Image 1 (cartoon, rainbow, N blue to C red):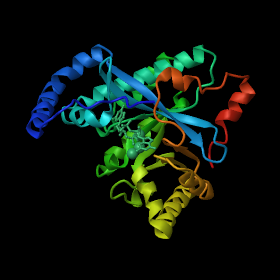
Image 2 (cartoon, rainbow, N blue to C red; image 1 turned 60 degrees about the vertical axis):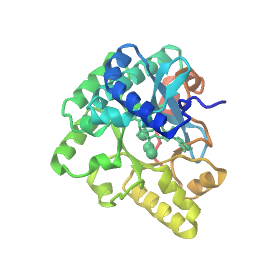
Image 3 (tube, protein in one colour; image 1 turned 120 degrees about the vertical axis):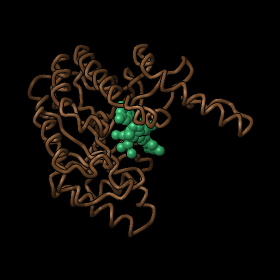
Image 4 (cartoon, rainbow, N blue to C red; image 1 turned 180 degrees about the vertical axis):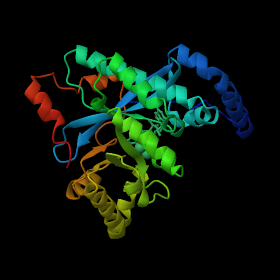
Length: 292
Ligand code: C2E
Ligand code: MG
Ligand code: MG
Ligand code: MG
């Protein structure tokens, strides 16, 4: 499997800068047409249960197909979307696409596993989003329980009461919430009791602390233990090695995603991992007992 993203060939430094500025300048104008042209593609990265190594769910990750050969990763355009306020629209676009994909999998007779979708701070603080997302999921006949919203930890900074109210609306609408990228920056442990999220996602950088020996392992293990005492499901991201997985087993982390298992893949490739839908009892089993 080759790389999906190629940088423009740039021989000289000043040429590179020019290319970049032109790209950024055009980017803001290209956002709306690109959405209309359906140039944004949703990839799915499977998550696996750490104990069983069976499918646990997936995270939806957007890419921009600027031309048939180029798939641009979100790090290249999300900052511009955030700067121009367009991110609110892109999040909605991705959410809708995910609902449509889950509907498709169900219609194909597959048993969908929960999908988490990234939600940016502006949308988190938008009071209409909970009702909008609830209606969107309902329109596709997708149970809200199959959808989780990932909000990056830095989005929870400040705005205590407003934030609390917004989160309550989302959970009341049936969506579960996940604190994304925990440990990537100056995460506060206070967030763990302030933010009523169901899932804690340990950031790849945080997990890298495992390489720094006993101290790193002690911190990761303590944070995971604390989250579990708060009845949160702990998910590790960016798992690349067997050693990392072994450690996650030891600390009873619930689920993991990362290149060790799979990179984000196109919709059809992810759909092929979903089991055939079975009778109601099996369904209840699959979704029950997801806590560790
Ligand atoms: P994230 O939500 O923390 O997503 C995880 C990122 O880690 C993804 O990068 C994924 O491809 C990458 N990753 C997964 N496993 C591994 C691994 O084993 N090793 C390494 N090195 N990386 C791994 P991606 O797809 O480039 O997305 C980057 C970020 O863009 C996401 O970080 C998320 O914050 C943002 N993003 C993606 N889609 C959306 C969206 O629809 N809305 C919003 N607001 N943000 C999005
Ligand atoms: Mg995420
Ligand atoms: Mg993350
Ligand atoms: Mg991350």
